[in-house]
Length: 381
Image (cartoon, rainbow, N blue to C red; front, side, top):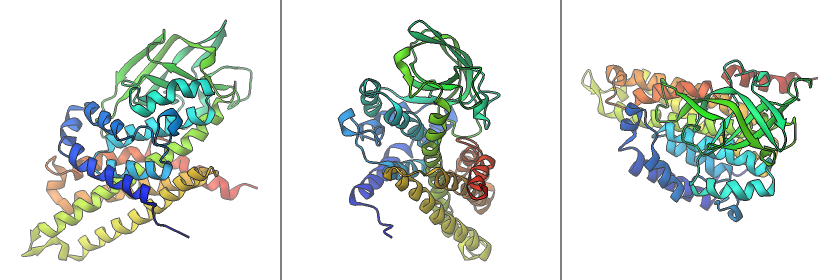
């Protein structure tokens, strides 16, 4: 069993780390405090090819693969989790299903613009009454001539306020069984009937764009149906497998940041005449962070590797997401504890890590949902 990265993967990881240090770290606090989407950073990420990492070269992407994408999200999230989730959604939740389920015409139309960063993408599934229960959608789509007309709303949609193209889901057959009555669609922001609503004021990932959407007779051409009619729920669940790897990567990145900042501070901060790194409680917290970071990264990269192989990875993605997000939140809590009162101020990044960490246990399926997914695999007859 080989755990080494390829030369290409290692080069990508180093590039992402250097970029995060040079371009993101100096401005991350400003974007967080202003709750402003970091357009200059995103445009530079596009120039490096980080917005087309799983898109084949023939569509303008780099085809670097899911392991490379996971490594990139980790290194970026180590400095800015908001930018990390922007990368994750654009690559995993928008480009991936287009590549896997789209027609050749759809791929040629959308993937080059997504790979170049000309367009940012979003994925709109969640509704106010359909979060963990994704099959309980209320948004409807009715066929009228050569187009579908959608009515309904979506909540907590990342990138949708800045995005040009969105994949969404609606009930197309009220008589069909639950989970067999939903269809996926692709639409553009200038389509008639689409409106962006409230920009959410969030605890963490404040520089990520998170909005409500409303569809008021939103007209989508028939050729923009994604995949098969009434097969949208399967597409949504398949896509979330990749999305969970992205959020596991984001959690690993936050954990990396917590560990690095805690080690640095513990060596510098003195109490009772010695660095606090000399005290056993601090040593134990750092040891736990280091151990759980290694485990989280291994779980996450395993899931990404299986995705690259085209092997089913639902359970592995859920394990990676659950473990990484839990470890990330524990590390963020301990990092603030190590910093003491300073950790509760905006003077140090652990305060932001603490706020950013929580969301990793909530989106792309809560921790409770991950436990259900994992346990079902072992309890199924």
